[in-house]
Picture 1: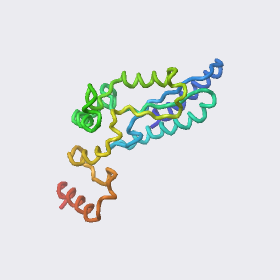
Picture 2: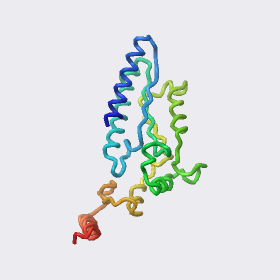
Picture 3: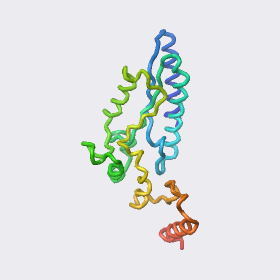
Picture 4: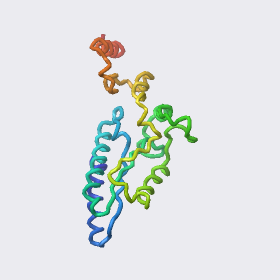
Length: 193
């Protein structure tokens, strides 16, 4: 949390101070966030919280700096192979994520396999003249993964993660009997019954 949010805050403040001392007008702040800050992810509560806070910081700074001709935006990327986060994921999860995007059949690279060049391209858009009037935006770069509302139940049904269905946001469709059956099944599998 500290590196993601406080780091972005302190670097932006220092940049703003240097910019004022040098009488530079306008400018761009581009934060790198994650779709996890928008949608959450299994077992990544702290990471989701940090990215959510970075997204809120981006929007607040956009309001503060916009009147000075400074745009502040963020790129919320999905898993990018070759980065620290993706390197810590099991290959099965990366492969499963590729199957959960509606774009998997039309993208030549298949699924949400993004590259660092994709993230750089979005940053160039924000930094260039096309980004002059884009401010306070959290643009997702996720291969359409975020629009697939069947992803959570699919992960549960495939038993990829042992997470109770209530954690997948579908609790309203469960009856009390369903919840008790799920809990009994979990206890039975754990050997507690």
